[in-house]
Image 1: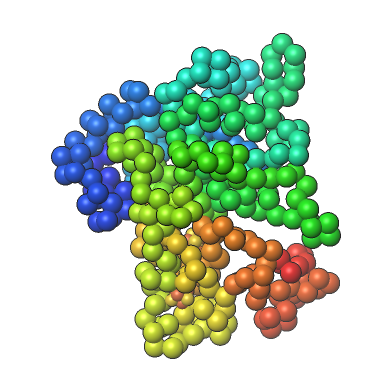
Image 2: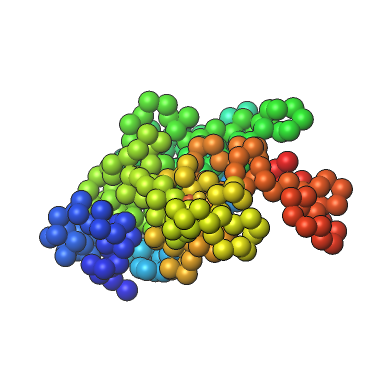
Length: 333
Ligand code: SF4
Ligand code: SF4
């Protein structure tokens, strides 16, 4: 499947982004992409993450991920989808470090442990059998990469793996974001989200390939995806304006009183939608949990997490009518 003009505009963020591209580039985007792919390679490393960002990328339907990988980018290394394993796979990384390659974009999913490399290793030195930490790969490859793209909230800000233990108030692995590893480096950008929408990932890559660094906001996020709040484009905004607020999950109305964080969150999901246009967080009634913001999940002190407080012994959500005993316990309480 080729990337036609409509697909291209769609993943580049609709009208705003399309305006940023010269018409001739949109018309000839397939050709331009192929040309760009001839010289631009992608290396995707995974640190402390749940692989949800990789899975989200695989849900790319329009254009489908197979055509993106086989036609538009040259994916040298990606732990979840690549066929190679073991030393044959990590040799790609070794070669890139040894030859000081400068012809690739580095994508990083997950946070980086700094207390010890043993918390997240990726392959080993063939001669000494020393386990190599993901931190080392990221630091080495990041030195020469054209751009370093943090994929998902864990890579962008630390996310859930950087949360503190409730008893000790310390993070056990010393997890940090990618930008903390590369303080002051100008070519680091963030695609946060738990997970990020596949369009945000592929669209940012295409922007880098075709036009260089996209315009970023104060959190190094592309403005074309994160520049407006969820609230501004929300399907329930008319309820908010009329003062109709949902009191219980499933009610008609704006979800603000249930903890929706749409007003504080930059994200275009109400217009872009998930699962190829099937629905959005606010439209489906779950509300926005602010997953693209630096403070997420903030130990359950904000928004929906503040209101969803399950009883430790019954597992029943204490802010709702009591139900049968369920397993679970405290939700961010
Ligand atoms: S549901 Fe959330 S994002 Fe939508 S109008 Fe209400 S507060 Fe704003
Ligand atoms: S609407 Fe909110 S919860 Fe949904 S993806 Fe965007 S930031 Fe995350």
